[in-house]
Image 1 (tube, helix red, strand yellow):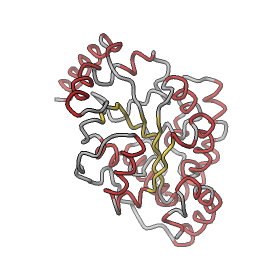
Image 2 (spheres, rainbow, N blue to C red; image 1 turned 90 degrees about the vertical axis):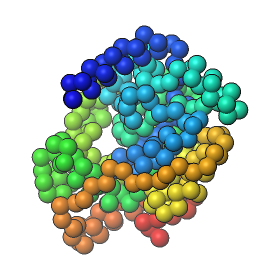
Image 3 (spheres, rainbow, N blue to C red; image 1 turned 90 degrees about the horizontal axis):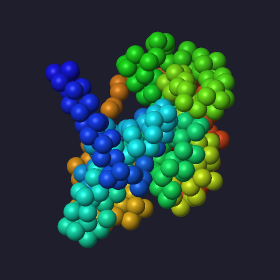
Length: 284
């Protein structure tokens, strides 16, 4: 079955590359943050008839780890313009292609690449309690085999050592991949304001929508409407909202560790206020 699936994917990719010039490029991207509900939002938006997900994968990961390939390879992942024209005739509005790759937010070169190759594209960012995000990310990487240190606290202690020189290395060799930068940045990925500040000069504040994932799960209809308004897409009813990719943690986080991490993130969370229009849910 696995071999058959791989064969089908290979044929689909070949067809996509052959017809890439006749395909759409994304109008918006869900760029992160990892473990903040990106899959849940992606699947909710993909149920809208005018929001067209990639043909093969949720996350194409072109602007982070796949940028050695040509833009035609990336374009091959999306719907044909002919299909979009039919939807325009049916609904009276132009469809938008999109994808979700949560490493884009954190990768030091992804924003520059997106701005260059997708001029006018909009970005959606989800954020959550960075302590919870860090714990969830550790459990996720451990389950996927990308983390070998089973103790969260020790993995956090190792982070500075693991990430030292990572951004410099990625900039020096733009087509390289840094394992720890991608899989072991438990605290660094939760310093959301740093990453948003890097994107703002490239896209402008008006083309970046930052959502509190707690609010998304608590009142999904309101947040969904906000996203559609941001994208300029008509409201055509609500999708089925579900949580996806949840991970249970091996053991509860000690209160002392949680408080220390919360203190670490406080200054970064404060800088999120201007992006969210108020205090983050985990600071209220």
